[in-house]
Length: 497
Image 1 (tube, rainbow, N blue to C red):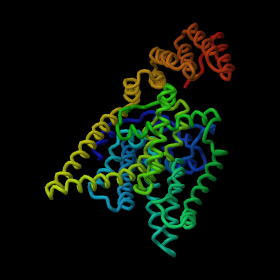
Image 2 (image 1 turned 90 degrees about the vertical axis):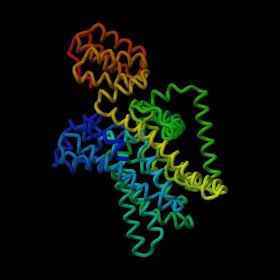
Image 3 (image 1 turned 60 degrees about the vertical axis):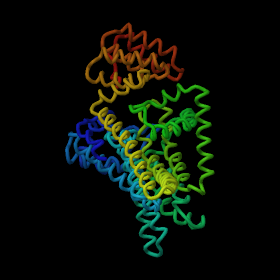
């Protein structure tokens, strides 16, 4: 499994990795304590707390380790990510063994490899700065195992395991906040058993960890800082069922392997396809409810998937690339249900073939093994190809442009990269194309004006700024009027990055 993504060691720093390294924080051990009292983007050198912000000190701590090992060379960063991914797969393997006691070696291996080889999850464990998801998943699964173990203990043994589970859960939350949405699932069967009062009591240590995390987050960020405004929340709610169905499709039949911009893609979804998504989501939800007694873990896993993926809908409402990393923790929970489904498939197939004698049973098991090997091989080949897209910023953005030539975000990302290289004309052409594809995003004309002025094309800069004043919402008018005044006065451009 490690071999399928071994090409990561040929990759450099891409996307947010570059800004984090340039920030100078993670290579300065004297600043370790700072990560507990600042937002996550302090690693980029940012000071201002944003309307939508994050608090992930444990994730940042791991980067100090990498900085100490290899400085500004990428090998240790990639090694840490690989070890975290292997750790998450191992924890998932143990969780399957705990929650699906009837799982055969074939089921354990197939389910674990499905998670480990998923090409969509490359974004979380091959992209260096995506490691918050493997960290949260590793600690979350470890907390789940400790929680299960505490249910079988009494006295001091119970409290020891309960406190361990709470500590692991807190570490997971301090790695990435989405683990918080898994908390209610810990009280639901088949993870927890017994009367509801007993389940609620056993949840207290984990709840204390959640409260502690929220207190720290609010203290550091000055509030939850989970969204920008009501408009973002409304769009996130609209996109949520699309995200659920999109994620399920891409996990089991991956096809869109590139740095995606969900806001742009989901905005283009028509009324009829959207209605189809809603109906599909309702059908899956109804099926999970009906099957909750016959296949409790499968129903539970769908709930886990839906709950832990829900926060990513906020990202789908803004111009920010990403998709696969948001699936990492949800996929781990979903894989537990997949294991139960595989047990049922294995039992049904072998029992039916067993009617033909021992030879028929052997043939059935062989067919299952070959089928799963072919499917997992398909995932591994896709993972190999996707890992190579992360070799450099150029290959990453070029892959997005190749797979989604109509993505304004992809054109803008490549243009920004070309601008950093000093390729002003190429950057300007990229931003022009981004404006054509999405005239509603103010950052595209802003950057286009910047590069026009940098190239000495004041007439073009004035034309772009004037057009933005007409087409963009009124709330952007003051900013572009000031920009237009600078253009007309011939002042030197402000840095647009």
